[in-house]
Length: 172
Image (cartoon, rainbow, N blue to C red; front, top):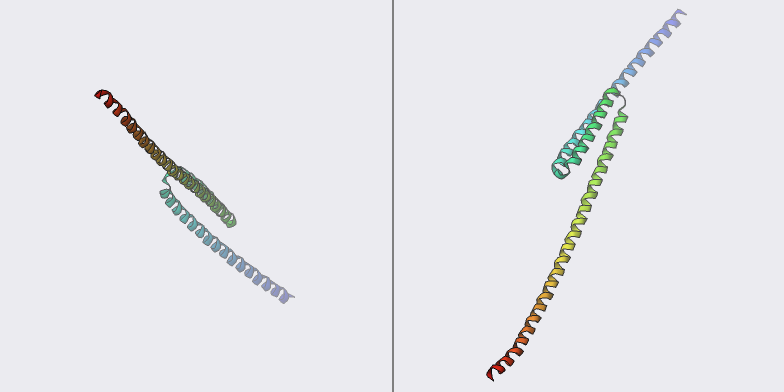
């Protein structure tokens, strides 16, 4: 009986050590995985802020909107950092927020593209209107020129008719 209890004790000891080893290795693997994902998120954020800096230079006229988006993004990033510090195990939540941030950026990009396209349409319409007005004006000028020429010819014809009669009266 003593040997049996010793055997059970040894088996329990090795099982406990094995469980502790397994728990420690999986815990370390989870920590390493979270650190890698946090590094990737920070890289994505850095690339994104670099792109925002480029956008700020490109869209000087839209600085108010870009600054508002930057502030929104900074707020989201600070919230992400708070969650990361408080809940380092919950990286899924951070990935979800980064995805929603990407959706916001995509939505803003789509809105900007829509505004640019609308501006292009207005510009095209304005050009067409200016061209049409120029054509109409040229036609009117040509018509006025022809009318003026016709009036000058009539005036000359009237002068020719009036002058000979006056010459006849002076001679008499």
